[in-house]
Image 1 (cartoon, rainbow, N blue to C red):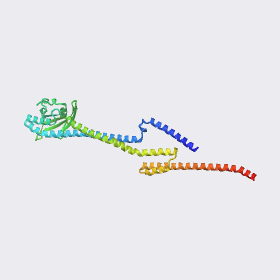
Image 2 (tube, rainbow, N blue to C red):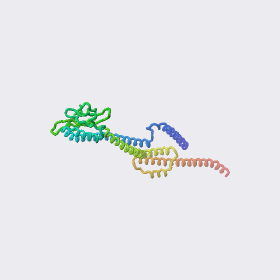
Image 3 (cartoon, rainbow, N blue to C red):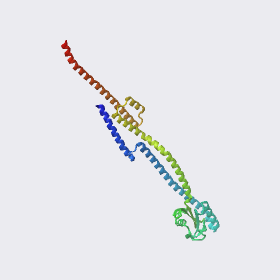
Image 4 (cartoon, rainbow, N blue to C red):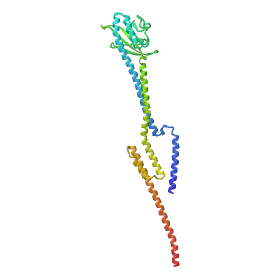
Length: 330
């Protein structure tokens, strides 16, 4: 009867396990029901990719800022260097030499389409320009382009070059305004330099391409590394879960071999917290299996004792009439 009950209980547990597996298969579409062997690696990969993306964006923004600052510093240095010669040329009223100076700066910096240089005298008239076709000599400042006009309106403090950023329909520009002061400290004019941000666009795009290559390489390294690390982190939980399932099968199914359980314990010594937990579960499984084996032996001995008692009773019932018949015959 006990064996029949055990078989029936095992069948019920098997049916419950089947129903549970069916319910789990219906919930596989939700991430909360995924296995830790999938969730932990995906979580590590997601964090790694988000970190790499955030670092890449921060580097890209920083590179844009520092490239713009480098352009401004370079423009200030060029303006200061050009102002020294322009002061001498304006003192001599040498328009041609001043034109050669500003034209050389415009050509070095990429031509008149990217760099415009205009020198105004003390009365606000154009003394010389890098593009005389657009800004003729002795013309008023009203003919200046929008970036140069915006730079002219800005105030410069300390006598040094000032930089202002201007955005218009043609693009983004940086305008440098430099007061021209004679040797005796008298203001004799103003230097205006308009730089297009296309000057550092190529450098910025090259920086972005390099950054994209490094990020792609990191992603290719982080994805398999994150999957391997996540799998290693989830592996102890998997072993503990397997040990619990084996424990349930040992209590509901046929008894396991205690010698095999001891061999399993010896092969897996405890190392960390989860390892010790698995070790304790395996020990508990071995003890339950040994208890099940002792119960089976006790049931077998009880059956043999019952058979012995029944046999002695039958022999006694047979011996009583036989003894009476033997006495009568005697």
